[in-house]
Image 1 (cartoon, rainbow, N blue to C red):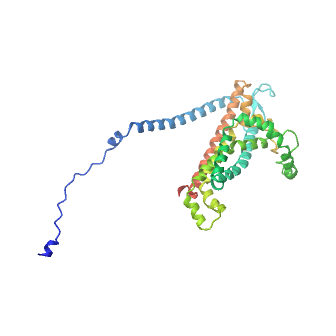
Image 2 (cartoon, rainbow, N blue to C red):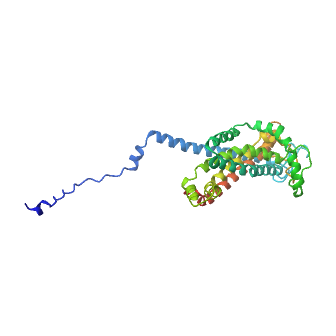
Image 3 (cartoon, rainbow, N blue to C red):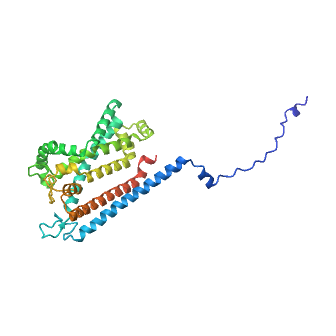
Length: 342
């Protein structure tokens, strides 16, 4: 038996010529799209266009009514401290400005953010990284309930409970920090911008807490485990892994809360004792905000007075757009330094 001949392999069969598969044309791919996809695409595109159209319509309406109001205004719209569209004190000539409203809106919103953001971040970190699951769920549920409370309820609670309870705090601030002029308190009803800021902080706390909590829960577990493996403490893990990852989310949550604070109406109108004066101290009663001024004077205003109020609403609209635009720029600049791209 010839062993060499038995170990020889059989020749491979000749390759079979196959026709190349032609790539599907764009028209065929488009035709193969399911009807549901086309409907969803059209619905999504239409929703985006409708949103732009609505925003443009609002801006045009506010701009048109603003031009009517400013045409006859004898005061400086940006620097005048009075609000008299009917011209009662000027012989029938409209005289009004938004200086007090800008100051009150910005100051009360900044106070609200300064109080709410650290507390909200602390609550969010406690729920997401410290509290046991049996305790975290009830706390999160209670925070969610705060967002469902109507504004008028917050306003009544603030006027009847919160404001009278702040007299002792304001006296303490006056004793130790009154020399700054910002916390000088002369007594009386504490219906001031500080009171408004505290109430707004309570109102925006659920928004900032919920968004921050969801962002913290999205931190990759590998980042936390790696930090723990290197010997980091719980706080060091949060400082090196959680907070950098959630920085953009915290900014977004803060801007959402700021938008709520800028536009809050009923609660502010219930708590604040409005006047058109700018006080150096945030503890003295008085001041005003855009939303509160519009809500309190719109029904009794004449047609020209309504145009003046709409003009102030345009300024609030522009402030909101600028705040959101600034937030987007901050998020875009810091995204590459956070863990969002990990």
